[in-house]
Image (cartoon, one colour):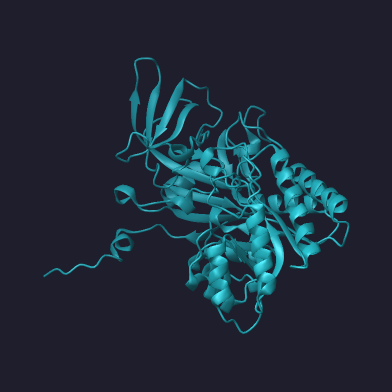
Length: 439
């Protein structure tokens, strides 16, 4: 049992207390940080499986076939790819490396969807050669590249549509409004559909929309679905294609901070799928296509915990503290980039009485190098381990080597076992790409 004042919904399902200390499964979190060294990321398999189950429950509201396709930009590695592929998920990728990782990680090629607003000829050729399920065409330039190619078999395409909707999220995460670099406006999408219909080797089978991420209000997503279905009807009436796949993208929000809304994932998914089903019935009325949901953050964010070791502590005259840890904007740039808010727990005393606010900062040469602007913590000592929840998405995928910092080790917690997913980066790793003549 976890105390009621502990923000349980932010932490992995396997987190619990023992002897007033924080445990993950049967392992003391503070001891894990000391044993495996920090910065350290641990993913909890049970929490990922819980999120997958929530999405599958939500998809029951859609009368046709449904598919969960993981948005690999949230974080991708070979072990995670294998984990998700074994659970029957699809994968959306945007680069040659993500495509290669997905295939080597065990995904069936026909469950891969290739996204991106500036796909190269090489990436398109790689996707065609691999036999991916669909290439999601983002613009007419990209369509022109595809028209000039000569594949052996017809190439399955979706269109990414820009519905001209402003998502209620940070401006950097808005992707479906006028002026966005992503997707085609309605008239451009209709032109693309007509050109695809005239091509001997291209087949339009799906429509896609994604208006942004970290969205808690379903209204604009529902509106984008309505516009997507209206476009599907128009395309089919013109004889330019049969829409067999419909994707409202991803972007459902997940709380990072105790003050963030905590809406059950299965409810958000159910409401979205029910709206899509009703809209398809009203506007189209024909057989339901496959509905593809593309979660990233909402699937894995909660499963991840980041562990750091406390170093220098500066006590301020107003009673506040600046607590420096051994990671920062090199492994989590989101607070600096988006103003993202997190909370933290002192692993050895997660329920200790707070002695005042603290700012958690990193060791890098930037004033913007911070992880948490303000959090109430007990008395913290140098050498203590701090745990930050909701660290599974967009942290490791945007990790960098600023100031020569090395990317952290990553483990998977699965039924009490700790399974290595990525080793800690080394200095030799960092210099391996350098071309250096000692003479």
